[in-house]
Image (cartoon, rainbow, N blue to C red; front, top):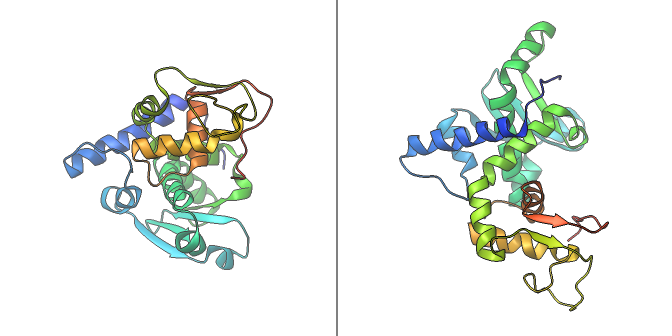
Length: 227
């Protein structure tokens, strides 16, 4: 599916709008952990369902499906039952992103082709534009900029954390004393704990902090996800 280019700021505004409007509905300011399941069902009026999507479609790596005709967000049962909570909530938020950003495009495409108005989210499609947009929306929804900055400040102070070494020269995990690439997971976990991001993975938080410029990696080593 082809989608028009949308700047990061535009996607972030849409995510903030969802949180703001949801807050008006429930009568309170909404802070992490963002209740994405209730946003899906209580705010957007969609049904959150669970099916073995890999068996249904005969393909591996299918995390979720948005079925517009039926008003359903369908999550793979394997992810919902035994997957990490962070991945599950991110997938739910990803489907919200498709609903907010792409539902009119999905409907148009279905009308032209005569197919069902639905979008299948596969791991193999992660680099496609519409999937990247939904991923970025999910990050902005679950990790609002304001709350990430506040949590980071609590843990690391006012300035960005510059990673100048791949491994700690001190041989430990003292984030504030000797920040390094191999300690990224400690940094991310501390920020998650400080900000109440209980339904966010360390991986997602690390990516969000890098994108916001709160972590600056000056080494040639990549922040890896094998921890």
